[in-house]
Image (cartoon, rainbow, N blue to C red; front, side, top):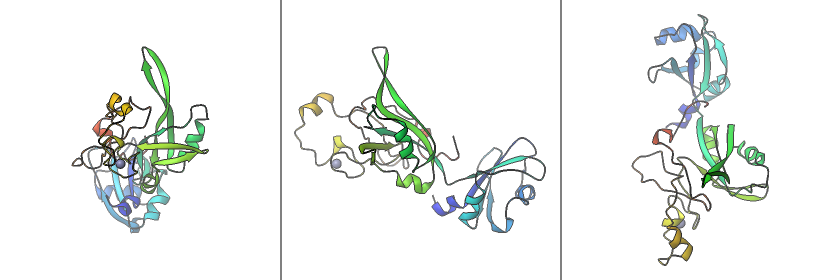
Length: 240
Ligand SMILES: [Zn+2]
């Protein structure tokens, strides 16, 4: 994926009304709104009422994004940046006795439209919160790349796991493996590791490439981790 092309591109979502079936028709519909001399590519991706436009400059795409306008024939058209993805993430270790809003404020640096909630587990028919928060947000590519693996929220160390992102080892800090498979791990297992099996969870997997064997990361106290269907892994364009 070319980040600069992504930043320079928008999706045109045509609402109810006349839908342009050809490039020429699209340009006719939007010529009052979009600077046609800055259009580099006009394309379609699949069936549906969306057209895609790549501009010669990223600023143009960014400036026009999130606007809605009326086309020449009266159709409502929404412009959305392609440089955004919906990201699923979890925040571990933040004390439940502290305000959850602090976590949301912290994550605002890395995305928008944040939806966050406490996870629950069922124990003998009783639903309990685990203290772990999970949620979604919409990120630009650079925001996505800057999401930390660990952070401090109000002085408290938290672990942040992101769906589809490569794992970081909680033991040695290296990328791409988890604590239970850490090369530094002594052959002799601790009693705790031996009794719990040390293979729980499937949270964080490498989703960008199917050739890579998924690796897992499990934080303490997150032994019951939901699996995500493969279709949800990776880039999801547009707001939820
Ligand atoms: Zn390691």
